[in-house]
Image (cartoon, rainbow, N blue to C red; front, side, top):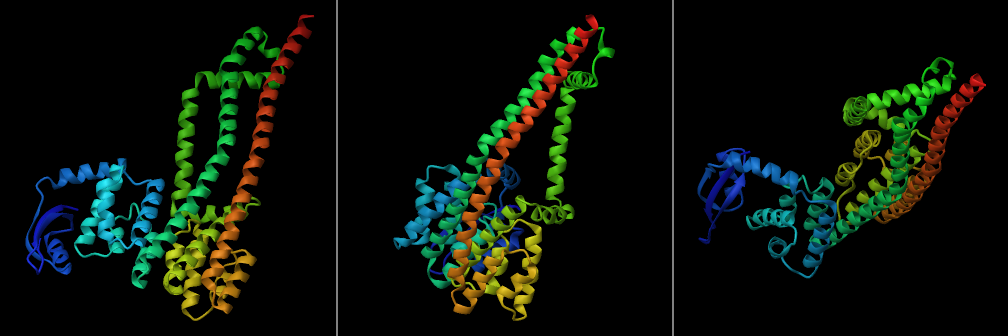
Amino acid sequence: MPIYEYKATTPEGKIFEGQREEANHNAMINWLQSSGYIPIYAKESKSSSARSFKKFFAVSKKSINSNQLLAFTEQLATLVKAKLPVDHALRIFRDLSEHENVREMSASLLEDVEAGSDLSSALEKQKAVFSPYYINMVRASEASGNLEIGLTRMHEYLESAKLMRDKLISSLIYPLILVVVALASILVIMTFVVPKITELFEGSEELLPVATKMVISVSNFVSNYWWLLLIISILMVLFIRYLFASPKYRKFWDSRFVKLPVFGDLLVKHETAKFTSSLGSLLSNGVPVLSALPIAKANLTNSLFLENISRAMEQFKEGKSLFHTLSMAKLFPSLALQMIKVGEETGELDNMLKRVSEIYEKETSNAMQRVVNLFEPIIIIILGIVIGGIIVSILLGMVSINDLAS
C-alpha cells in the first residue's frame, strides 16, 4: 500500500503530522476523521514505492523474535501494572529499548495509540508480530478494564511456550549430533576409505561376493555423483515441505500422524495443552465461550483438530455443552473431557481448563523426552549396522581373493 504524508489538527487546535500506509487517499482522510481529527492535507509520499521496498526488507531482516516478544510483553505488563499509561510505556520502549526492531515496532504502536486507537487495534496492524490470540487477549482485557492482568497472562503463556520449545531444542541437540556424525562417518567411509581398499581388488571384480560388489558400486556412485545426491536431497526436502504445507495434503498427513503409536499420542497431548491453555486464559479474562473458541482454535496447527473444533463451535451455538461438542470430535483425551465436564457443572470452567493444560503440558514434556531418549539407541544401532555391514563386505572380498590366491 502507498505511504501518505498527512497533517491534521485536533478540535483543541493541536497540530500534528506523520506518515501512514493506506489503500488510497479517501481511506487516509477517513482514518483521520474517524480518529477525531480535522485533516489539513494528506498526500502520497513521492518516495512511497522506495520506502515500501525498504520497509519490506527491513521487516524481513528485523522481525521481532520470540525472546524479544516475551521481554516486551513482560515489561509492558510491569509498566501498566505500575499505573503508567500505555502511550507512556510505549514511549519508553521507543526511546530506551536496546533492540532497533523493538524501537521501530513501539514507535509504530505509539503512533496509533496517540492517534486515538486502543492498544489491541494498534497490535492488530502488526499481525506479523502479534498472533490473533495475543491481540484478542489484549482486547478482552481492555474491555474488562484489566489490561495488566491480560498482559501478565499473555506473558505467562509465552513463557510456557518458550520453556517447552527450549526443552525440545535442548533434547534434540544430542540426537541431531548423532545423526550428523553417523552420516558424515558413512560418507567418509564410502568416499575415501572404500575406494582405497577396492584398489586391492583390481582385476578380480568378477570374483568378489555380491555384498562386496554392492558396497563398491555404492562407493563409486557417491564419489562420482555426490552433487546429484545433494540436489536430490534438497528437492526431497522441498517436496516434503510442499506436501505438509499444501491444504490439499495437510489433512491427509495430519490424520495419519494422530494415529501413529508414539508420535500420535504426543501430538494429541500437545494440541490439547495449547487449546485448553488459551481457552482457559480467555475465559478468565471475561471472554464468552462462543467468542473464545475461534480465538483458541487459531493456536492449533493440526488440521484434524481445527476441523473438529469448527464443528464443535457450530454444535455449541445450538445450545449443546462444551463437553458434549468436544466429545463428538473423539480427539481429546478422556481425562481432559471429564475435567471440562466438571468445570462446566461447577461453574469453574476457566480454572479447570488451566488445570487440564498444566497436566498435558507436563505429559507432553515427559512423552517428548521419552521419544528423544528412544532415538539415541536407534541411531547408534543403525550406524553400527551400516558401518559393520560395510566392513564385513570388504572383509568377505579380501577373504575370497585370498582363497583364490592360495
